[in-house]
Amino acid sequence: MSNSGRGAKYWISAWWPVALSAAVVAASSSTWMGSDHTNGPLRWVWQLVFGPVADARWDVMHTTIRKTGHFTGYGLIGLAWLRAWRMTLPGLSYLKGAALAVMGAALLASGDEFHQTFLPNRTGSPWDVLLDCCGSLAMCLIVYIFTTAFRPASMKRAA
Image (cartoon, rainbow, N blue to C red):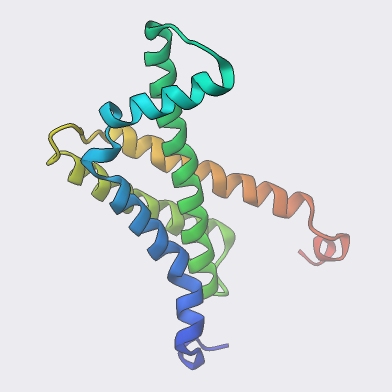
């Protein structure tokens, strides 16, 4: 089927998750989402659920929570990109779609980290870009494993 015959609704349905992801990243790439502003609220929630935590231990946990958020968030962003590419180019192999998805997530992460270098309480780090790309790649890999492992037997024989 040719892509040219698809209407605006199709293209919007394919790409709105990517646009929404970019909007969420842009909104969170602000001074208000810096570690100095998330420290108090995250600690309050943590202590509400798990009880008091020492300051030295909390510093490590706060960083871990934030980095886990990066990894998970960009994993979901990678899936949004993968979905959009696979809908846009239906004959695309999973590997090529995943590569495009990780590249899309890398571009978004790079832009986010570059923007953060201009904020007074944020820093841009290539290590965060790498972490984000790893999250995107990991989620694409997990989806690939699950879709191939749980593929109906009739489709396995055809492949």
